[in-house]
Length: 239
Length: 271
Image 1 (spheres, rainbow over the protein chains, first blue to last red):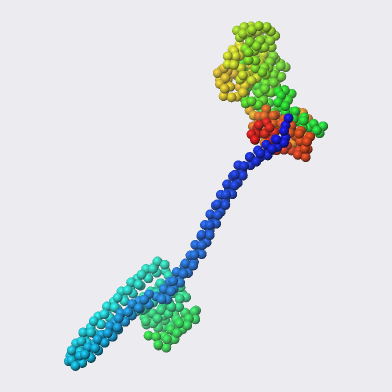
Image 2: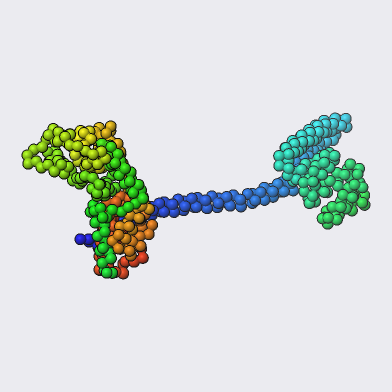
């Protein structure tokens, strides 16, 4: 005689048992999917963060570079250039004071002696001046070489503009013309570059070309600085 | 009539060897025909083997029934393990000789050798469950078959042990070796439906879809005995539901749940 109720219970247990492997597999699969997707999402977030960071960093670096260009090591250089002059002047004052003191003390001395003292004082001053100029040139050359190296690596127009300005300051107008031209080729919207370019042309005795270049640039950009420079060139103020 | 349908269907699957219940399947019919042909040939022995429940007993019964119409054929469903009793039974059946005392092999083989046999009408002894016979008795059966006065059809289970028996005793003497296998899913469906149709259970026969038969085949491996057992229990459950909870019965197809419940009850499923 069949015990149907017991059989039904056993069947229910059997069905539950038979589903257990499938349930385990599904649970494992779901767990794997969750883990994989969470890893994927976190990776994506990281990537997004890095992607977001990069332009900011670039912008910052650009700004830094721009700032560098605006400030330019030439300021530091100028300081360096100025310091010996100041030293010189201080020394000169001191020497003058000393001289005055000496002269006041030795007023009653013979004039020949004063001339000798003056000669003694002036000669070292001239020597110091000469030395400081040499330092300045060598440091400028080093700066320019470093910047040119960097420029060759990343082709940053800010660097080429810096080089152009530097050469212009040093009076190498041919090179300043070349670097300004390169800068314009890389980015034709840098006002300072066009101005250096025009100034270099003027220094190279190519006034007409400088005027034409500035006119064309003014037409496209309406740059006030360029207009001022053009007026100066045309009026003959710029030399 | 309505109430009896499941009871009748259940009784169809009672595990009884009855030649009336023999179901002709294409593959089995082919094997049966080749077996009949083999018996007509002047061979000494025929080995019929297969796993339990593959229909060997039913096959032998059917063969016995067919052979009886044309020649002397005797079927021993249950092995006679005592040697003297075994020879006395064969002497009684083949030659109508009854022995009150002991009949040993030497006496019996002399009797057999002295009998005349007409060619293909050689008497046939069909031995079911032959794996139960002892090795010495099997050796004597072999010697009896060597006299060419009696033919043996031996049915045994196909196991490793039975293979050894077959090799050791009958390797050179067996002229025909026939293997019976479990049915495939299609054959099983035909088997079930033919069995039900034979008993006029048309409604239940139509309830078996290929899916439900596939499940039955999966549970029984196509073994006829297991199938009969499973379906008997299954229809028993149907009888219960019909009487106690008819709403649980779907009349259009056999419920997989009830098949599984029957399989749990018959231990085809360990639950």
